Length: 361
Image 1: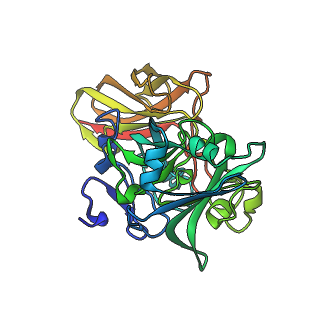
Image 2: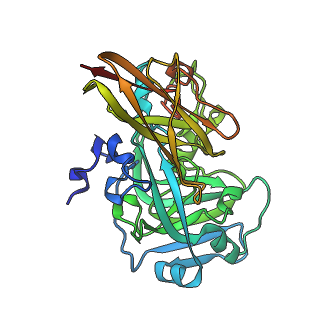
Image 3: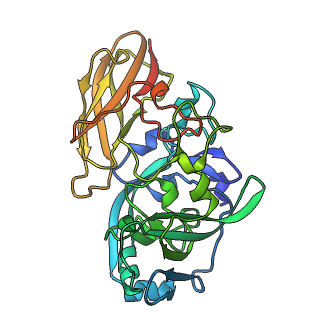
């Protein structure tokens, strides 16, 4: 089946192929089935031969490595992590309601929670004799071909060496108990839990330890957060904040926006995520944020990089209602109330209260 005809996803763009998970599917289970998992591409979707694909490891290491998939899986301990992955543009559609922004109009479904398996990137770097130190970076070069501003190049990003050396930052070869699929980066990708999806590079072919971030255009100019007064014409990528960890966020998945509901008790459900501290509570308002109810949480306490699912049954009378969700983490932090407060011209990191309008009658 061609990737563009996948029935489980809502397609946001055909070329490159980008599609999100319908919101109601997200709350069906703690882990997102591979067929339901969002797909984010910046260019082509290569299909390398698993038997011949090789990974090089070099740069500031004592013993550069050249590994095929069989050697990678044979020589290094297999590790697993249940982790959320999320596009930095998730919920961008909410920012479009404030003012135009660049990028695909993602709803709240450009994320998913999966069981990833592979080998620890740290183990591979140690085998190469990595020279650890402050201010070092791990550049990741990939096979997918991108085009931007008339320039053609292969995708590449970097993550700080400290993140690369976390034992659960993986060179992943499996997802949800099966081998990676093509659209999710087969035969190997990076999984950097808590970091924006862009740093979880797919179709990896080379890893280089160096004293500066990647020079790739994706790293150099994309995924930069700017203040609201900055425009595409005035933006200086060197002054933008590089997006790595993702912020505290939540969304309503059921009911859908503009749903028509019957009077009576209704279940409201959604997700909550945090890049640093556990989710402590999620609150729901039935009146646009004037009063709040606490929801029931399904916390995946054995997997700290996982998301939290929440639900509540509420009475709804006849009329129009604005349902609003907000989350609090264990440090007492919460979300900003308005998308006006988070607007930026690239449409990144939207984490204002999530609002859904329903009609009961």
